[in-house]
Amino acid sequence: MNFKLLKKRKVGMILVILESILSLGFIGMLFALNVLSTSMVSIMAVFLIAVDAFLILTQMTKKTHKAGKVIATILGIIFAMGSFYLFKTYSTLGKVSAQDYQIVSVSAIAMKKDSANTVKDALGYTFGIIGVNDRENTDNTIKSIESEYSTTLKTKEYSDATTLVDALYNGEVKAILFNEANRSMVLEAHDDFDDATKVLGSIENKKKLENDKAASDVTKEAFSVYISGIDTKGKVSATSRSDVNILGTVNPVTKQILLISTPRDYYVTLPNSNGVKDKLTHAGIYGVDCSMGTLETLYDTDVNYYVRVNFTGFEKIVDALGGVTVHSDYTFTSDWGPSFVKGDNKVNGKQALAFARQRHDYFRGKKTGLVGGDNQRGRDQQYLIKAIINKATSPSILANFSGLMDSVAESVETNMKSSEITDLVKMQLSDMSGWDIVMINATGTGSKSTTFSMPSTRSYVMVPDEASVSAAKKMVDKVIAGEKVTEDQFKELVKGTNSSTSSSTNNQ
Image (cartoon, rainbow, N blue to C red; front, side, top):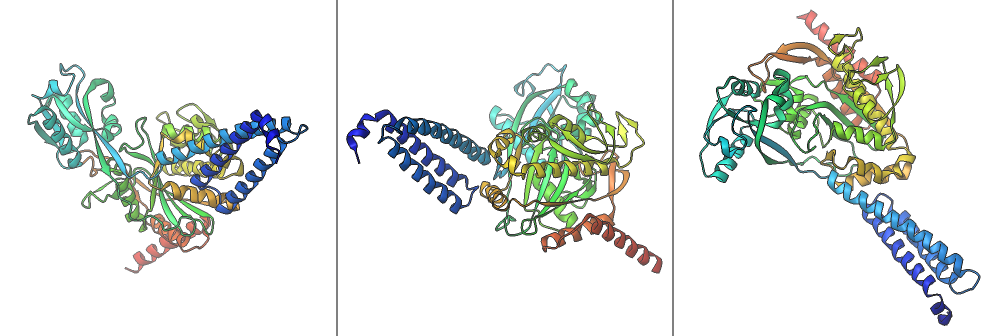
């Protein structure tokens, strides 16, 4: 080797060395992110070593040293940018995945016209509290206030959030301790609640979430994911009512996903309700684990993971994907402005959100003549999830994995480990085969009843159609067992259950 010549090519050699270091960093980040197979990354590493050797050789001749400098500079920039985006993806996965807690925010609230502006100002007040539901968080908040101000709070108990707020409005108490997860529910009874009251202070309680049902290998065995959509602009980790409730059962071997949409007002038993029924959406007030437990009981299956998306994040996901093409069963105009035609619609984030929120039988409070209501809204949400999955697993978008992760970092959370997510991405990259997504809906009949969360108020609920629930259970079992299922099969199962029920009734 001509070392004298190499000394004359100091600038070229520095560029080659920098390019070599950056290429090693790039390979290191690929190993750390673990979205490509080890053999593929190893082949890339060998190839880059050969490229580095070639670039060194270019600096040993007059004819090639300038070209070598240019190539080293270009490759160095590429590897630097690649390493940056890989690192960003790696760190974003850490933020989104393996969530093992939820935040329960409890606020001290007074009427806006009250003279108190802080918790300290209101220490002499009697605070209204909910007597039974969510008592642990209420008690933790009381202890925290009493510890901070070395005092003892006077409290008065009420049965639920609505009567608690009624007491504040009526002047029975001058302040209340209020779980913010109840805010959207209270706004249905007091639409001026946000404007008529003020927050004197808030305390965040962390609720630990355990997951002892994780799959041993998400690329080889079936698993179920609870997909929850929450209507809040705060932290996605905050407890909140869940307006989208979809159970996804995934079989990575057969490449089939079964999506079961359950209406938000489904009248079901919660794990913490002592047999008293409540709306499914209210389960989210007590934590995502309560929602998961409710669906586990309803469909008699383990729910291994959850994914929570707030509506802000929902828009970001669709926009990060460059929009998606979603099917609509009807031509309609949404309450939020965007219009849709029967068939395929290319939508951006804002349009997708309007599509997912719309109840078809009403438009701005008036009957439309369309059918479906909450059941159709659930189906629309499934159409949208299907469109997102199809776009997110296409070859073009997987190349933008980093950009997608960055756009949803603050609005999505899951208890899946980052290694489980990257294992699924690695599997998808290795075979690039499509997924068969089957969508079914649990149905029911509208009624009015009191609930566990609002025992003093009769509100709209949907009484489950047991035939659709029973059929959904069987569909889940089939997917887990590795059988291929279809929507027509679900319809036949529902029909068969109804026929059996009719025969039993007639024989009695």
